[in-house]
Length: 376
Image 1 (cartoon, rainbow, N blue to C red):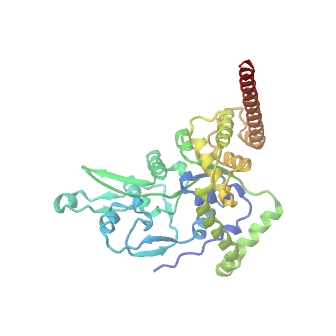
Image 2 (image 1 turned 30 degrees about the horizontal axis):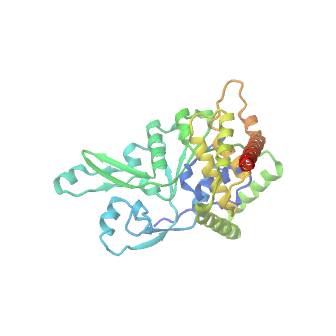
Image 3 (image 1 turned 90 degrees about the vertical axis):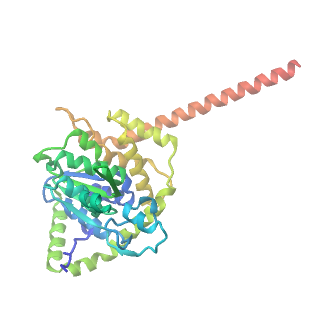
């Protein structure tokens, strides 16, 4: 059995704060919908994705399941596990590392979704499924380098599965389903061509990365990579305490996430900002809310703040902004904090005005009742 190559520690990555945060938020809540990382080569895009998978805590799975079925959630099981274990059989459980699946640009539809053996089903009445990439990636990370060069139809399939959390295969009246909940990480160099706007919008978060210009930080990158190349085991051991600390923080955030609350004014704030930025559709609003809740859980809070919303907006809208010939997307992103602050102030003023109107109405009602009593 081939030994897995050593993985560069996630916490040893220098800079690229938004990229690392986008990955962490998706690790806390896979329902956010993945992240698209755009930028020049050699900026640590693939390194960060692989490092995140190695960082995440092991998962419990049904031992004989090729789909990493979660033994604690029967409602998500594949058809095979349902047929076996909903009848009362003892469920064999084991722990596995979080899968990291690297999808080649040349992947075909059958390679991605898997195939049903129709002949075997007709002749023997047996449902045999040859699992694909989506099965292997369940509860893990599906990484696509140069996603802009992947066939649009394949990208559609991946994004549909990531959104629904299930892969359904139907052939000749025979169907099979299995869970397909994963963190979709796509990387690309915009100079080599962009994705269609419809596909861009399907990625929940987006980050623009570029090479670090600060001289001291570039020296730090060199020193760390040389240390890793000279003795990867010793380098990983040096960073292991920080890796474990972040891993535990993510695990705690996952547990806290269901308790994170938001107010109706938070929803108004999000809708106000996306409306001002002229973002098409409503997917961005939902992504911002999910990312803000995940960030609040990451910081150990059960209510979202304006800072959570600002960060979520910066991650959710870069690829959704209209890019005209004279548009400066980065300048608009720089104003997000001010936009959120102003929108919150407007909401507070509206709230105070409504409260004042309610108080005035109550006073008028009380005065009217007093006059009635006097007239009697």
